[in-house]
Length: 150
Picture (spheres, rainbow, N blue to C red):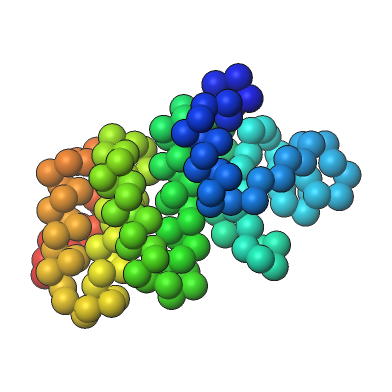
């Protein structure tokens, strides 16, 4: 990723504006075992207390990397019940990275977050329909299948 993704201005800008990057050697005696680093590249998103909130493994193109990091930030917001912040991150993925591998999960989580916020089941129906139409091979469609019964 050092040769392809990290040097890209879009990646540099995204990371600089949204994250505090820290590089740790995979063979670091203390931190590698603590964070279960078994293979590289691995990217971890940690909260302020140092707890892991999201993990990626493997190489990503610049666009996929940004979409994946946005998903991780959105999932962290979602888990902290910061639903409106999560919805904004998921919406950004849908608008800016519609073909990303992260997008089906963003569709799912955005619909669930909207449902939690409004208690309107139409959000669950819509997420199912969107996944069925746009991402029919996604495992997220299978996970959303109960919403087709609403």
